[in-house]
Length: 542
Image (cartoon, rainbow, N blue to C red; front, side):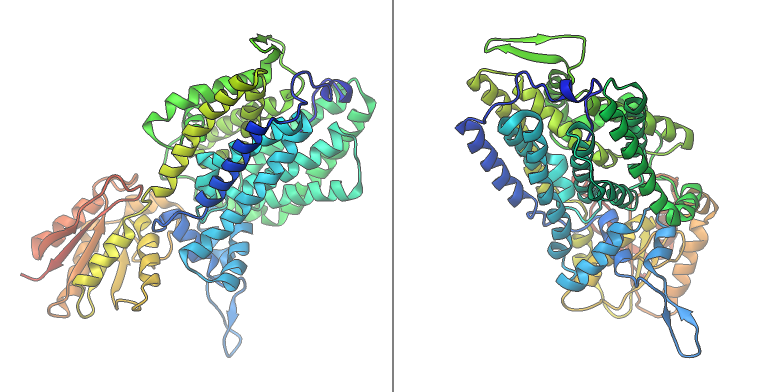
């Protein structure tokens, strides 16, 4: 994305990277791409909260509908997002995608897979520009098999789109500043890409801020006048992208003030970086730390090492110009996001790092090219790729939610117009998704979620903690008992997990009230191996 700080001549001077890829590297690259394509379409798990919520929001109308008399009814995508905490672009794209290809899990996740596949040729182009076909093939291999890239290319969320937009922006800035290829089309493209990124994920703001810092430095400190002028024009393009984002700014500010991340607390920057590096290397598994260290070494080699002979690598404290700005941008994004997260008390999840994953992936690839001896380089490449492949296989095999097992159990036990109660409401979207997918049609359940008696399809994140703190689980459970008692023989199915933040024993309290008045039996046990797990208790009158 970014030129070397020393100016165009030095940034184009490649010491040990511009080489043709040997046959062995090409074979590994082709195999990695084939496996990467297959893995992106192999997730059969039920959708978990974030995925199901994305689908449920995207299925809403874009504009409010009118009824006779001129009244406007219906919640729109935009209104739902005001209570959810995300920008709208991904949801609008998914809305159109579902109209064309349907609403099966496979069809919905295929859009993310498509974005993920489009990242692969862009990774190759970036690598080839900076280090010939050797770096191009290694870069595409890393992106193809990365468990991080595979996970979010196989999930109905916006993060593979984020990675795609970052790759596009990288190429455009590389054209404009490092390669000195100015054109109106490229500047317009950069402005639109910037706006699209901000309309997709708010962490794009931290990436834009980091790039802005680098461009300001180049605009005033570069030794090359052409680079100075190019950096200034890039700043203008970024600013235009921010201007295009202004219509959504009031909604973002409302979300920032009222939604936030009640599901997690703020993290130390070192903890954020370590967790993210593990997820990049092997996935979100305990043994990922073994491989994260190797990945970190390759990143450091990319920034500070020179392959001088087949048997030696020279390490200097002066960073190389080839990728120094990419490394600086990654550090700046982590620093800026950490500061803002600390100020806002916001939680963190590694998926937010999708804004700088493309840079890290190419840095890892560049570190591998520091090994000049072909056999050693091939071994190092396999040491990186094979754990990634293993992590990706584990990722697509993971059960993300127990919702399908729970709904199947309800279907086998349900009779008449029973009651379905979900605590907390964060379990609702996954359950509702499986209910909607049943080929035999809806089960005829009367469904509630705690604390708000709301539609299971959605979670209202506005002032979430405050609302939960004010809720009365005992009164809620008594209301359910009153409803159940109004129809003899009515059963109550209670889906619950007491581990969620801000609930502090509320779900257990509901279970206690129900159990004191009705006979209960657990028909689905919690499977802690599932990312989103819960128990199912069936209550009936004694």
